[in-house]
Length: 487
Image 1 (cartoon, helix red, strand yellow):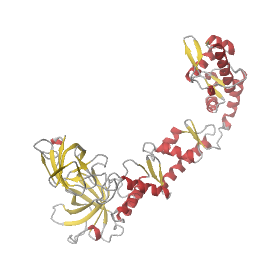
Image 2 (cartoon, helix red, strand yellow):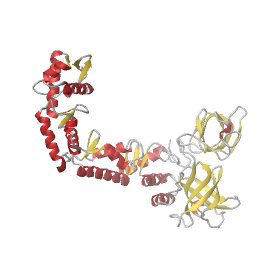
Image 3 (cartoon, one colour):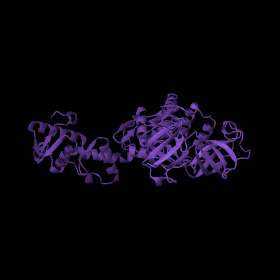
Image 4 (cartoon, rainbow, N blue to C red):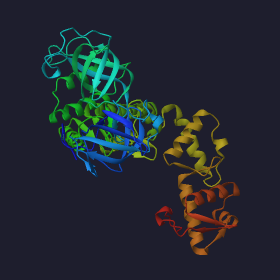
């Protein structure tokens, strides 16, 4: 159910006007319900404490009801509520809000617009000017909380006497984006201004940053109403870059369908990028894609011997901008759609072909020669990697498929490995089974090579060890068997 300003939403809020302990246990609360339905048996959350409860009974117009629509004064009896959960004997009191889970939590900082003209204030307001760092009392719903008000320089867009500000509360409060409130002097004697919440979870450290100020200005310039959802969505994407779609703008009066429609419209206009779980501003996404592409290109230039940039390295370079689960995978998918090639745990440009840099070419040529001289009796890896250059060159040959590592100690030329596997498969197809000794004699190699070769085939699911013999695995795909004339 969706809507705005009085239309039914799945975001019920019951600001508590009166609360008292119920004789049957739990507490009874009364107030004016907004935003969504409440029903008997429903699980609810008491904000700002975050305590859980269950509605045992709900009444409207003194009549018991199963379900109560928003826009009505109701009384609800809450069960399963610890009396010690709140500041009153009932565990809940005036100023608390009965709501449901998933709508955000309490805050001690909110970015707002405050003023004394237009839609922001009635004519009875004091003409006293607003003062920076003034201690004020904020009246929101049935709650009254003391806060310190920090004013931004300048006026709010479109409001001659309005100011952008940040309210820093002494105690947590529960607010929605676009909520309206009143400001009084801390003594409550003088009404100062009205205000509207622009960001219910403000940041005290970065409250004057340019990006946050742009968000506040765009929202302050947009009157409340059904059409403001687009501004709220777009400004959030511009400020935060990437967001999770689940729970996006949950602490607002906008419905899930409204938010989804706004995101889809922005995506259709090329101003947002959507995945199944994430939404991103198009500028942010393009910047991330460009940074990822630059990282791949830099790896190709500095390490031409690499098949591609390791994904772990790419993730490390982007992790500060991709804190959300699934964001890195979404970037990889987008890179794939842009033509990049992913191979195992590496990514490359399609035009990139790994090649040894000049300083490693001599070592690479020596390794190729040595591996080809005795294909099934090459030196051990220890003897092949006499220095750092030969070790890196051997790693290159393995990565590019010119050589095959049987294990940590032995390596074969790729052609020799293919022919050896084909002979083993041919032998096992003929005989049904064979010992390591029989296979070694068939290939004409030593146990130093034969044992790690058989163990590798076991790991890869081509063969299966049964005591002292090997058999072909019935489940092994024929495509896994190298094809030669011997088979």
